[in-house]
Amino acid sequence: MRTATLTLCGIALLTASPASEVHPATWTPLAHKPSVNSIGTMVLLTDGSVMMESYDDIQTWIKLTPDAKGGYVNGTWSTLAKMRTPRLYFASQVMQNGKLWVMGGEYTGPYQDANWGPEAEIYDPRTNTWSDAATYRRRRVVRP
Image (tube, rainbow, N blue to C red; front, side):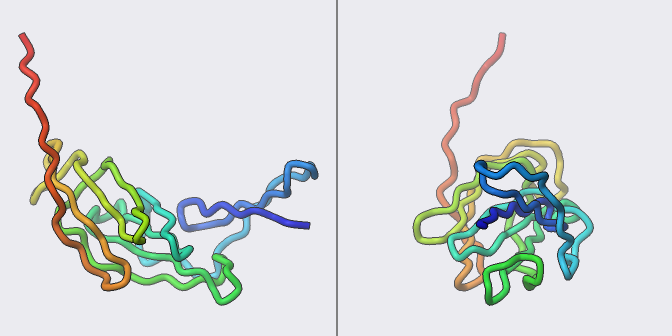
């Protein structure tokens, strides 16, 4: 019997059977808790690890790396480099080279004021570093 798992909020795993077998899904608590209280954005990286933005401090990212068998229940948590620009509700894309691109967002800037910035960054999981990316050129909309 094959099962599929879904990581949700880094706190528990949802295990479901294939569609041909009808069984209720179950939650499995993780063996270790993350170092943050709440999670915002979650991204599955190409190496199978799950990168998560802390909702407590929106520049802080953590990562859940699966164990040697590929499971998340006994995986390892680590704290990653802080994003250069704080941002919430932003665009993101895992690129083919394994890097994470993020752009824009609400509540960007030094005081996390409600604004919508066009700045972009790229995270490199191999070096645990963020670097600036091309800024999105947006047109201004003038309302009457």
